[in-house]
Image 1 (cartoon, rainbow, N blue to C red):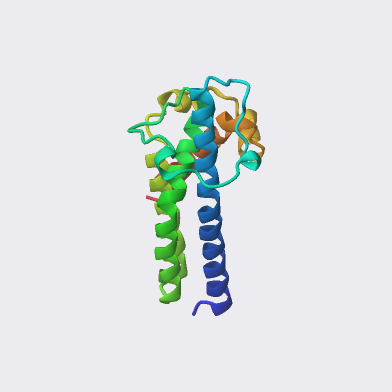
Image 2: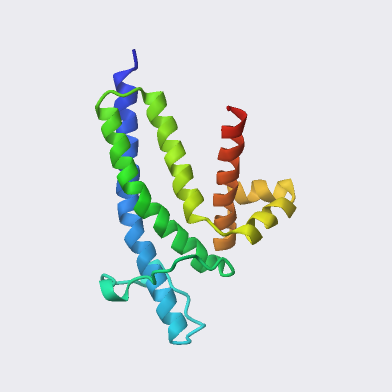
Length: 175
């Protein structure tokens, strides 16, 4: 029999993570909105900062809808992919919170959530051949440094790709 405290703790952590995503998503949209508009106005010296943003982003002037992400610009690529990830994960977390509340097996719920996160990230980071090739050529110590202390949006993008690869290797090992 599973410990009820453990179940309560997991529900609490899932709920906190969902609330974090609900707060972080709009901030990323605002940051991307300001990035697009500073670029459009040709103000290259302006670096968008979340702290400088005030008010809501008008819905009609929100982030550009794109069929694919341009991965030649790590800043734009990371923000756009993260927005996709945040939006997709909120309903998945709600579903897994419900699984926990319905007394489903915790190990299966955690495994399911991890697999759903993998699917979302894999979808968000499509068409990244150049970045994946870069992973193949980075030394192991640099990869560890990226995992522990990413510096900049390029490293954050690589960290996501490292996580995806690690999950795939773990999943293939367990098959």
